[in-house]
Every structure is written in structure tokens, then in C-alpha cells.
Image 1 (cartoon, rainbow, N blue to C red):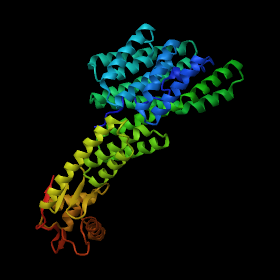
Image 2 (cartoon, one colour):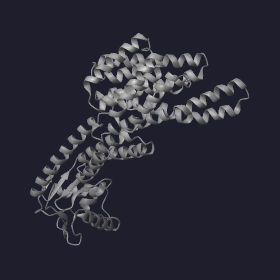
Image 3 (spheres, rainbow, N blue to C red):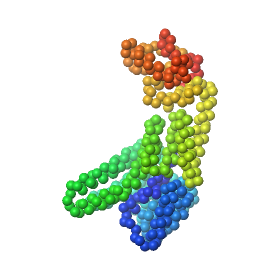
Image 4 (cartoon, rainbow, N blue to C red):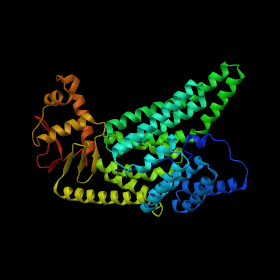
Length: 445
């Protein structure tokens, strides 16, 4: 099962306070630390985690001296993500101790973003009650900030608070997913989607409101709000794709999951979310294994291997090897079954495996699947046209209405299952009706 990278949005100026801060001044220390930061960030975004760490560590130390905590938090986000993917467990513990010390020393632990980062980091090391209480505190802080912004008519502050709420709810989604609380996970996914929808409608609403007012102060406020909105578009798009991804991962229907993963993969390509794509490919491969479509599983496994730098993506590399082993085991099982059976029915995945044609999917072929299931339930027993209509179509048999429909349906079924539909081996017809060859070796799973 997929284990999402801990924050998943690192390296994208992911928090509202750093996104909307004023540009840094021109002094040499700030210029130097920004160069270090940009060099580290550039390497990080390219997936060169080992190369990014020295730059980000130096930049982080400069940012602490300058008390530039938004940038410090950006560095920490990326450093944690890099060390997590590199499986540097001891380094992660050192980072945690330092981070908690800095937060306490400079009293920045009351910031919702800081707390969310701390919670993400602690999900594997603290008990569930502590994490749940921490998330509740963070959400209350963000909601309080939103309320204060509304009371003071400070729309920028209200906007920042809403982004904090969105980020916190994403943390809830991740927390529930990690703890397999899927009903709660779906609930929070729905809440985040509502906030995302509000965000995407916001720009048009601001422009419309701006066009209706002549008040200079209102015009200025709305322009600032529009600027802030544009500033965080990358952050929101990253949240959006992670939410879509999480929604795909918790889907229980494998066919539906397949489509959701493909849609998310396309979105990742558009947004150039290269770091996610390796994980998406391996999730696609694992899903096709569950669908018993081992050829497609192998295709996506090769894509995962092709696009993965195993030196930097060590955690993903472990998953790729696990799925590769699983695929090999399934192939061995399938080969062994093929030696003993002509047709294997897989009810769970609505497919059959024929010894020569391989996996045959009955996706969206409900009538054909029902007919095959009926014939396979009693091989050698002929089912009359009346029995077929009443059992499969659940209608009263009328020759003028149903005879041609039955003929066409069985023609399609033979084309799907038989090697040569004109000389069927499995699906046969007698005067009594249609039946499955009783000599065929059939396994129903």
C-alpha cells in the first residue's frame, strides 16, 4: 500500500505566511542565504535529495540567525521530506530535536503551519490520541484566526486563515488514512474539496466585486487579495492533486480506482509533479495486480522503474521491489493454474483467465458476465432461451423480441472468450439451448 511522503507539498513555498510575505531586503547575508535556499530548492524539485541537503542545511542556519522563520520552515519541510525518502532515520531524529528547540526558543509553535509540520513529522512516532489532540488544537487556531479576520474585516488575514484550515484538514486526511479510518478520511476529503472549490471560484468573485465598487480603500484591499490569491495558486494546486490522489487510494472498487489514478496521473503530468509520478506508477501496477491484469501491472512497474532514481528515492525503491516480487508470485500462481485449468473465473474482479488468451475483462459487460456465470454454474447443462431471458434479463420471454438479442449476445460472448468464434470450444448450442462444454476444466474463485 502506498505510503505518501510525509508532507507531500515540500519545496513549493507551501505555507501561506511565506507565500504572502514581503520580499527580502538587499543586504548581503539575506542575498547569500537566498542563493543557498534557491540552489537547495532547485535540486530538491529535481529529485536530487542528497544534493539538496547541504544547501538547505546552510540556508536553514542563516534563516534562524535572521529570524526568517517562514523560510526556515520551508527548509525544514524539504529537509524532512528528503531525509524521509532517503530513509535516514537517525538524521530525522536529530532534525526533530532541533526543530522543536527552535520552535520553543522563538515561540513560533503557535503558528498553525508550524504545528501541522510537527504533526506530520510525528505521525509515525507518537500515539494516535496525541496526534488527534494536536490536530484539533491546530484547527481551532486556524478557525479562531478566520473569525478574528471576519470581525476586523481583515480579508487578507481571513484568506490566510482559510488556507491554514485547508492545510490542517489535509493533515487530518493523511492522519485518518495512516490509521485506516476510511469513513473519517472520506469526510475530511469532502471538506477539503469544498474549500478548494471556494478557492477556484474566488478570483472571479474578487474581480466582480472590484468592478462594482468605486471606493478607493476597497479597491486597494481587493487588489491585495487578488495578488495574494495568485501568489498561492501553486500551493493550492499541490493540495488539490494530493487530495485527488488520496481519494483514489481509498477507493475500494479496483476499476473505479484505476480511472481515478489515471486522472490523477494526468493532472500530475500537467503540473510537473515528477516526485509523485513514481508513486502513482507503482500504485497503478499494484491495482492491476488486484485486477488480475498482470500485463498492465508489468507495464506500469517498468514505468515506475524507468522514472525512479533509486539513489535518491530509496523509500519508493523499496516499494517497487515489493510490488515486483508480488507480481512474480502472481505470475507463478497464474502459470500453475493455467496448467491445470482451461478457464479460471475471478468473481471478485469480474474477469476470466483463459489458458491461451490470458486475462479477459468483463468490465461494463454485465450481461455477458451474467451469462458466463450462469453457464459455468452447471457445465454441460443446456439453458433454454426462455431460461436465459428470465434469469439474465429478468423479463418474460417473447421470441420476436428476444431471439435476435440472444443470438447477437452469444456472438459477442464467443468473440470475447473463444479462440475462433466460428468453431467454439467452450460455448456450445444444442436444440435444448446454450451450454458450457462439460469437458472444459473450470475453476471458479
